[in-house]
Image (cartoon, rainbow, N blue to C red; front, side):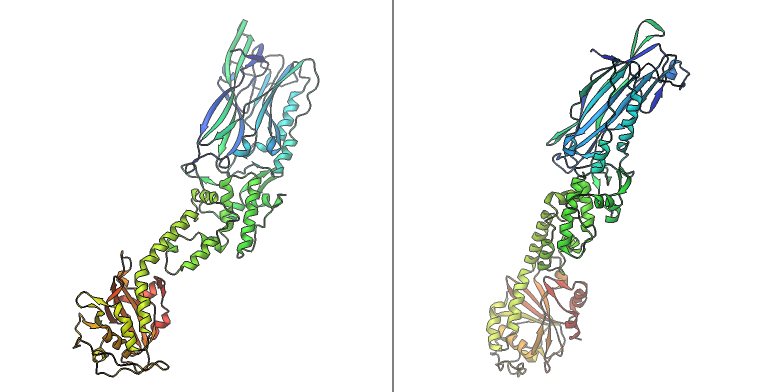
Amino acid sequence: MSIRYIPILIFSAGYILSGCTTTRQIAIDPPSIEPHSFQPLQGFSVIDGDDYYVRLISEFDSKADNVLKNGCTDIAPSYSKGDSSAALIYGVRNNALKFNSEATGFLYQTATGKCNFKFEAKKQYLTPWIRLDSGKETMVDYNIYTDANNDLNLSKLVGDVNAASGLLAMTGVGMGVAVMGQFASEWVKSSQQAAPAAVQESVKHSSESHSLPAATSFSGKTGTLNHSVFKIHEVSEGGINPFGSDIKLLGELKVYPEILPSLLLKMTADGIPDARDLSLEEMWYSPIKSTTGQITLQQLIEQSQHPAKPKLNPDWNNYAEVESNCRKLKLVLKDLGFNKFDRNAVLYYFLAKNGDWKSYNISPQMAMADEIRPKVLEDYRRKGFGNCLAVDDYAVMKSMGLSVNAQSDWNLIGESRQKKEQFFTPMQSVERQLISVLKNPNPAEMARQMFPLLTTAKSGDGTVLLQNHLGDFGLEALLNPSAPLAPPVSGAPEAQTAQPASFAPAVIPGEGIIISAHQLARVFSGLSISELSCARPAPEQQGKSAENVGIFLFTTNDGSPRAKGGAIEFEFSGGKINRIAFQLPTFRDFEQDLLNRPEIGGCRIDPAFLKKLH
């Protein structure tokens, strides 16, 4: 391969070295391109340009021994302006961001005499962090200047460039970060100050300029980071070899891109940004580098001249105001150059100050609680900040470990709630029919309405197994056709005597007796029921694959054979009641279940109702 000879020397970053040969020259090969692939972040199918930041770096990788090992003991002699100098200066531009900057690759100066040359090469950050979709447009030119007698004063030229580009020497997370976006005017101003002084006219100098290929490219699932590598050779003439040249590889000057998925967040072991366990205040205090020094993220936003500048402390109880400022904050963060991970971390904790945001992101376990009615859940879902957040924003938040409900999560919640409601539907259907019948003050009509609701395997339709666990309140007497009925409730039609039963009631055994619809209607009419609660599944039924036992409470009017009231348990199958049992409210721990779970299956019984039974 042909190589180009120019009088320059490059060593590792930050070295200032002295040489000991009669003549030293440097040969630089044209840059070779080393592609390095990168993949979408875990959990994402493609690289979309909004998932990474990129910055360009120039760095020298030394492949040679330090000159001290070659016998030169004069490390840093007094230096006076000598015979020749050379410099490599990068020109960096991104037209979309109106960004232009210069940076130094190296500076070499030599003078006559033993051990009398100077070489300087430092690691340089050629750009601040730029979001990948904008950073792919960054282009780098490299300019090589040489001068035979130093009349160009390249040292001053390099000094001016280094001073102007010092802003870009950033260390990253935790130490302050520099980002570039369309409204990051601080860095644009810095770039405009970085233009080097005009090169002086001289007949003894030369210069040449070339462009490097784009440092980054991506499409679909594949991305490429192009490393441009200059091989640097030392060419020594004279010294121990007076009749020839000694050529050896000194090292490689590399211009390469570096990518990072977040500037404000820590990373998981999988390289995914982790936004958990933070607060809005912590996000606001994130340090940002600017031309005036280090400021916070909050100050950067407040100082922005963006037309959609948000209020950072809106009325947190006003949904519309919070949603509107969330939208503005999102636009400002994007135009300042922040990617989707950092943007959505800030937006999450901004919205976390609002109660509607917390309700929208209710946990699936809480969403299934009986205390939260379907109408309430509908209100929660309706306030999903759709004017600020897109479906992709929720996906990004979830990838960072944040607890949010995407549309798919709400669909699952809706399906689960529907299944739960369907689970209670058979019991609620029987309950509605039974309660409706019990509210009929006419015993004959009650009996006719009761008949199709009852059935037993032994005696068929219109019959039911009756049990009494409420104590002696005269149930047997109510079953006797000759027993007088209790007076009707005031304002209701006069109660009629029930038809004689074909089942002769004796003393009711513990397992109960089968009675007819007419007898059951006579019992309920005789009890003179005042109020009825809604029905709940029996405590031991809860959690089973199917529920077929319900319990409701009742109170009685004055003069009823059962003072105050009690509980009625009903067992059903196929939409018909097979068994009815009078119970104490404390039976099956029903009262405690009311306290532990105030609402279940859409039924909430007020504690005041219980007090009426004691």
